[in-house]
Every structure is written in C-alpha cells, then in structure tokens.
Length: 572
Image (cartoon, rainbow, N blue to C red; front, side, top):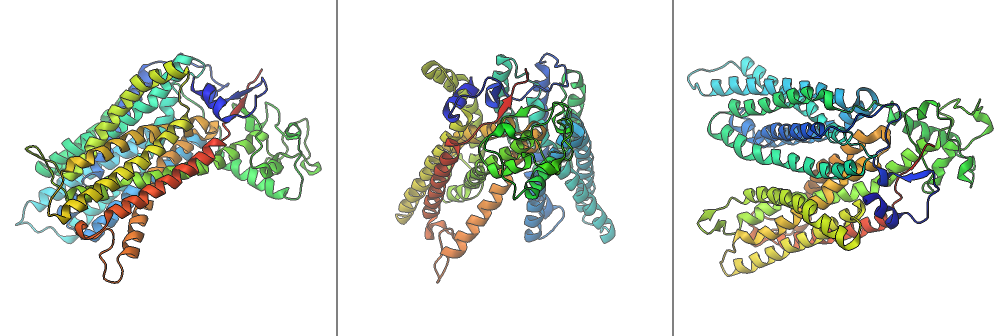
C-alpha cells in the first residue's frame, strides 16, 4: 500500500525488524484501549456532520459584509475590517480547540462542547437579525440608540461565539480518522478515501450556503437565512450525539506543549554536553515512565542531532531504577523525536501557505479578470464570481475521478500507489501550469482589448479546472499527511496547523497584492493592477505568481526528497 512505496521513495536504509514506518501502518493503535470493530456508521455520521457544519458557517460568512452594511448601516471600511477580523479569528480558534482536545478533553468532548457554543452563537445571531430587520422595516419608528447598540452588541457577541465554536473544525477530521482500525488493510484504504470525502463535504457546504442561504437572506429574510444555519447546527449536534455508541474514543495523553518545552529546556541545560554517536545510549525510559504511558515509542533519527542532548544521560540526571527522575533535566528519545517531527513539518507547511496564497487569486484577481471579459456564454450571462462554484464542482469531480479511475490505473501499471509526498509534488507542479494559463489568458485579453474587443469568460475555465485538480492533490493530501505523521499526542494540533495554511495564505495574498500595487504604481503609472485592468498589466502579476509557484515547487522537492518519515518501534 501507500506506506510501502513511501518507504522505498524516502527511506535510505532498511530499518531493524522492531521498527515500523508509521506511513505503512497508519496511526499506532492505543495500547490502553481494547479496540471495537470499525462501525461504518461512525465515519458516515462525521461526514454528514461536517457537511452541516460547513453549510452553517458559510451561511454566516458569505453575506456578512452585506448584512453589516444594509442592516447595521456601518461604513464600508468598518465592515471590511470587522468581517476580516472575524474570519481570521475563525481560522485561528481551531488551534486552541485542537490544543484542548489533545491535552485535556479528547476529540469527542471538545466537539460537543464546541457545538453547544456554536449553537448559542447562531441563536443569538438569528434573534439579533430578527429584531434588527423588523425594526429597520418600520421607518416610522425610531429606536433609541441604546436599544440599537444593545442589539448590535448581541449580534457581535453571537458572531464571536460562532467563531470560537468553529474551533471544532480541527477536531472533526482527526476524530473521523480515529474510527478506522489501521491494523486492517481495508480500513487503511477506507481512511484514505475518508480524507477525500471529508473535503467534498467541506466544500459542498460552501456551495449550499452560497446559493440557497445567501439567496434567502437577500430576497426573503435575513433571520430566515440565519435560522437555516442554526437548524444545520441543531441537526449536526443531534446526529453527533445519537452516534455516540458507534464511536471509538481516544484518551488524551497530557499536554504535548509541555513535552516540547521539556525537550528545549533539557537541551539548553546540557548545551555543553556532547551527545553520544551511538543512539542506543540515549535515554528512552521504561514502558512505565510518565511520558510513555499509552504512547508508542519512536525510533531515533539523525536530523537535528543537537536536540539529542535532551536525551543524553549525564551524572547530574540521577536516574533511579531506569526511570525518569526529572523530565526537565532529561527527556526520552520519543519526546525528542516528537519535536523533530514538528520541525520537519515546517518547510512542508510553509510551501502549503505559499500555495494557498496563489490559490486565493480565484476569489480576487480572477474575478476582476472575468469582469473585464464578455460574461455571456451563449444566451446566459455568467457572473464572474460564479466561476468559483464551477471550480468547487470541478474539485468534487476530481476527487471521484482520482479515487475511482486514477488510483486503480496507477496500481495496475506500477503495482503501487502514489505516495503522499509525490501527490503533493504533482499538485505544486500543476499550480505552475494553472498560473501560467491565467497569465496567458490575461495576455490574450489585453491584446483583444487593444482592438476594442472582448474575449469570452469561458477562457477562464481551464485555469479554474487546473486549480481544482491541485486542491485534490495538495490540500486533501496535506491534511492526510499531517495527521498521519503527527505524534500521537498532537493529532488534532497538527491537523489545525494544516488548516491554518488557508488563513495564513489569505493574509500572504493580501500582502503580495498590496506590495505589487504600491511598487508598480509609481511616477503616474497605473501599475499592474489598476481599477481599469485594460490600463494595467495583470498578466505580469500572474507571471510573477507563476515564478513564485516554480520556486515553491523546487523548494518543496528539495525538502520532500530528503524527508524522513516517522518510524514507530513495534512492541514485542
């Protein structure tokens, strides 16, 4: 399966018999639990849950700026700032939720507590919309500023409860993955499909809310639209709780952040100590030591050797009966290796942020490009922003084609699957082609504009399709990779970091566009991205992003080629 070919791709030497590459077995089965047989209903419930959760969240996000402007009557600058702050907060709270899940509550408890917070927030938003819109419709009645201010405060309080409740998103994905038994080949195969279908549910919610709920909000009633989002959360909470008997629950192993700090402190304390060349002399501790309860042991790797000082046994450690005297003076090899895993994640994570910043052009400059084209296809007028829905549909189709057509074909020809790192590499290469296609289309549009002609918006379809395929190869695989390679005590946290690439990529995209606008619009020149694109050079901007994608691809290859996968020591 996938782990076997990842091992042949990346592991340079054979491992001892008591070592097992984590990619070949999936997550280590927790020794403290007698595992129940996999119940197919559990992943199905979680996928349905994510579909409802995504629909509810996007039902608030999609039209937030319009609600603030038309109902609350705030300024455009204030609306943009409030919406951006709330959206950014909603993508950072999953890190908090993941930390709580991995340290204290576990995924199950974190999900239902977050959902209750989410539901209270949605109820407050719906009630606020109901009272605010009913008041604004009675032009003869002048509400007092105190009453209006109270309702606005209630709305924003509910809005940020939803933001904190949305921290559930980083916990739902690993919770669903925990339902599969990695000891069984069929379950390992189903788990890989689970990541793909989870992504489909994630983006389907955006389509449902962006069409049905948004239309209801704008044409019928804001409160009714928010009420539908509230109903989605009620159904999600009810369905999740009803599925409780089918779930496999994982017990949290304590604070992973504390373990990281212990390694850093122990390393600093032994900064002058020489670590042994023989890794077998490093401290691992007994199976009963504090850190190793219910935890698989990780094999030593040769990267970041300076951290091995934390596991180097020194006379001042005062070890008694082969057990740990002070975790702040000496740490186990497993603790050290967990920190090494996080450090190895950094370059892969960074390339994901850069990719997301480029991919976000579909929601900004691609729409601007489409607005300068002939938006008619046949007898239909196509809003430029609607092509993002076409991209979502293309991504859903790509997931199905990949799982049903491409994977069996590759297995037939090569007798193995593409590794996770190989899949992401393909995605990064396709991102180069996608941006080059966009640049060529813009060049073609500018040439036609010089002749006072408009080219059809259909020219944009290829770049949207290619980006849809890149999402399947990169975003889905990135979540799967971070979950699979994460230390056992950090599954949710690492999943949250994978999701965080979306938020940070959006911020990076905004920074890039701002810098390009400032640096190119000088000495009376309109710059590359002026209000009138016919006077600018959006094609130059797209070619620059093509270059950025190329550098990102080469950088990714350099790190992926030498990436050391997690190795678990099999207990005999």
